[in-house]
Amino acid sequence: MPLGLGRRKKASPLVENEEAEPIRAGLNVPGLDGLDGGRVGLGEGAAHEGLPPPPTSLRPRLIFHTQLAHGSPTGRIEGFSNVRELYAKIGEAFGIPPTEVMFCTLNTHKVDMDKLLGGQIGLEDFIFAHVKGQKKEVEVFKGEDALGLTITDNGAGYAFIKRIREGSIIHQIQVINVGDMIESINGQILIGCRHYEVAKMLKELPKGKTFFLKLVEPLKAFDMISQRSGSRSGSSQLGTGRGTLRLRSKGPATVEELPSAFEEKAIEKVDDLLESYMGIRDSELAATMVELGKDKKNPDEFAEALDETLGDFAFPDEFVFDVWGAIGDAKVGRV
Image 1 (cartoon, rainbow, N blue to C red):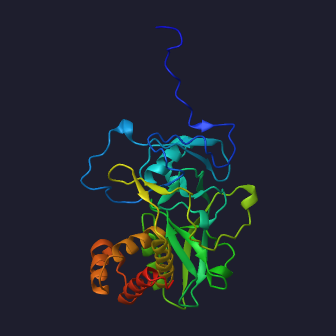
Image 2 (cartoon, rainbow, N blue to C red):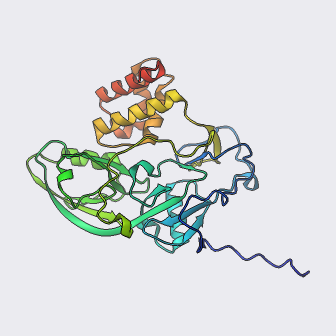
Image 3 (spheres, one colour):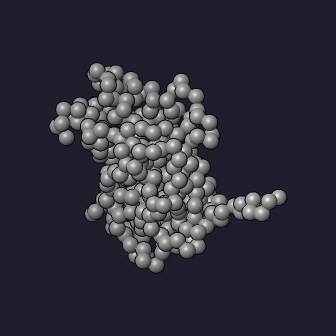
């Protein structure tokens, strides 16, 4: 073998000397010239029906940098198409079971729900993985109809607290925090449940009685101890690029346009309605509803499309009508 042509050594997934900052130079995206920092989506569904997937060699290769939120060396991850695969890659990089990952935030190690990783990742975003920490069991007296909780989930079987309303029942219980995973209610294990199922269960608990929550809080770094902030939920867009690179569970990655101004306003309004009616926030679900409704001619057509696509949610008629109205208001600039 000629000198200098030996096998290349495989790079370690951990980069010991890199700092916990968003890394720009490490993102290798061949074939995407002109895409100035788009976003990677982790949604469901097929992409560009009728088109065969491009050869593997021509598909974009995305390398992201990641750390454990409580502190770790920097790792490199690539080759995931949905949230479960992302957690598996994080597990490989740090030698932990993927089930230890509770959720991820982008560009901050803090439990900041404004920076929560949802269905999209900016090409220049730095991923911080929050892993399981202390377990706790809390007794709660439901003295009012509403507990003051907004629930979300991580897309891989864990539901957790995204918002606590100030002055609410839960707000008065200091050991319950934003970011806590809800492991069980009155002994019923909730691993694998979606956020709307957990919210419904909490809403249906009888008023005037006590119930028990088993929670798991994320492992915290020293500067996050005693932190109870992050109860606000924002709608800021991540990334600064002109397009969105959406990775799907079925089909190849596709470059898409960012939502229009109308769609952004409609998504924000529908997300507010989701919280008001169901106690959940889910911008990806809101975006799906806007997509379903923007071309429908009347609320009956919209309701039929929702039932066909999102029937598991069992949306009440009043909610469907309000969503239809919000989409219409956004179209004509009233929101």
